[in-house]
Structure formats: C-alpha cells, structure tokens
Amino acid sequence: MSFVLQCTVAKYLFRLTHMMVGSVAKSELRWKSPGDDDDDERVGAALSPTRVAGCLAWILVWLLAASAAWAWSEGACNEVIVACLGKSGEDDKMCFLDKVQEFFFFKARSLELINQGQEAPIDAEAFLNALYIIDIGQNDINALLSNLPYDQVVAKLPPILAEIKYAVQLLYGNGSRNFWIHGTGALGCLPQKLSIPRKNDSDLDQNGCLSTYNRAAVAFNTALGSLCDQLNVELKNATVVYTDLFAIKYDLVANHTKYGFDSPLMTCCGYGGPPYNYDLSRSCQSSNSTVCADGSKFISWDGVHLTEAANAVVAAAILSSAYSRPKLKFDQFCKAR
Image (cartoon, rainbow, N blue to C red; front, side):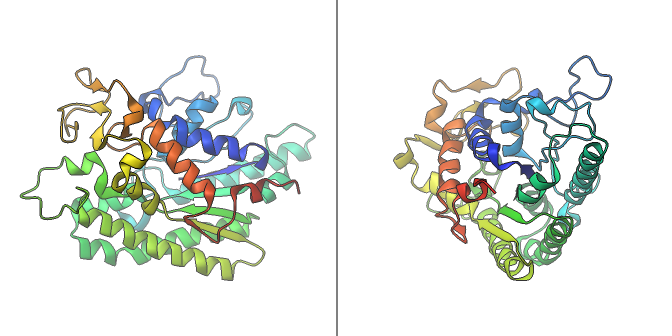
C-alpha cells in the first residue's frame, strides 16, 4: 500500500486513516469515472476524506488523479487488493509496479497541466517534498502461506524484496526523496486465519496466535527493514524510514487489557460467536452477521481489518517513532520548506 501526500495534509490524513478504518466497509469504496453520474461500485476509489482514510488502511493506495475528472478537492484513492510481489499467484490483480507507473502518469499529467497554464492538484515542488508511504506485504505473505509451507515462503522473500527495492528506485529516479515504509502486521493473530480448521493447537503461541504465520511476518519484516537500511545508504539525499508494524499490532493482542480491549482475537462484526466470531463462508457484510455493541472493546473489526479504537493505538505508535528507524518524527516531513 502506498500513497503520496502533501505535507500540509499528511498528518491529518494519516491519523484519519487509522481511526476510521473500522467503520468503513469495502462495499462502500466507489469512484467516479469521466462521464459517470452515479456511484457505480468499482475496484477503486473513495472520493471523501473518510473513505480515503478507510482505503489507505486496507490496500495499496496512491492519492492520484489521472485527469481533471477526478474530484481532487475531496481526495481520491486508487485500490490494489494485493501487490503481486514475487509471483504469489495474484498476477491477475492490480500490482505494486502498476501503481508506480500509474503514479508516473499522474505526475506527468499534473506537470503538463501546469505548463499549459492550468490548475493541477500537485506542483513540481510538492512532488519533491511529498512523503511517499508504502505499507506492504500482508496479502502477499497470506497468499503464499495458503499454498506453501513456511520454508518455501521464506525462500521466496528475496525476489519479493527485490521488487520492492526496484519500485523504490523507480520512484527515487523520478524525483521522490522521502519514504516511509511499513512492514506487515501480526498475521497469525487475525481471526480470519485462526478460524481456518486445524488438526490441533500446537501452532498456537502463548497469546493464542498462529506461530507459523507470525514467523513468516517477522521474517518478511526483518528483510524489509534491512532493505530500508540499505536504501538509506544507496539513495543520495533520500530519507527512508522503516516501521515495524508487527511489533505494534502484536502488542495490541499481547497487552490488550492495557489498551482497554476485552476480546483480542474475536471480531466485532462477524458470525459464529466465540472464540473468533468469524466464519469463512460468512463475511461481516453477510445478512446474518452480527455487530458488537461496543467496538472499542475489540481489536478486530471483521477478521482482517482493525477497529477504529485499535487503529487509533496503531496510529499513535507509528507517529511516536518508537517502532521506526531512523527514529524520525512524522512532523519532520511536514515542516515548511
């Protein structure tokens, strides 16, 4: 997941992203194409700040406008379900490098409009000073673990990381200089994964999470963190911040009472009741699903995405820089230049 922001609105949208995700359903994500008068549901974008926030928390995102038809005054969000890294079997989906190329088109189009004396959402200086956030890995690691044993998943990490590096290098070559890169979360603590039938509980850790999924997430994040360190050395005059989302999100489960959560592994919106309230054949959006009375007591909204309360904790942890290296405050990227 990635997006480009002007620093004047970056922090607001970042907080909004993590605080609103629990209340926005995927079915609400819509976009308007040129000539559309109605809100056809598409694989695509949200045109209000709230929907932008929800979209950012789920998917690979670019805040972009391909033409003047996009309502930039309200924000725009372009969706990718998976990044298709490392040929994970999702190559028919919209992919990370596709979004990079789409961003290049957006940038070229914006600068073209400016050169023609027209208005554009972002000018050349804003592109240079923008913060490029990449949040990546969850759906791809999940896809690999669905088909391969742990050792084979780990063996596929190098080409995945190589593709991420290539994408960042492309962005850098196109003028991007500020990057904030997030790894994946605690995949083994997702009710969706915990609800998959298993022979026994031998893979569960002390907090009830699946060790294999979490080991894969940690392996990916460790490699991603090392890549970010490498990019900081290789990319002259660039800043690359890495944030460990696994540590942040696992802490939500391990120390859930500290944050006021009662049911760390149950969904707020789902079907089936304890222990996970998640049914693989019935999503949160199904007619017979139920919604909890108090979402602030739950970490998981629908088995995959976090509640508003949990995302607020995650946002605060990211903004604190305690889980990042180098430990740069988010505000540093929003100073007047």
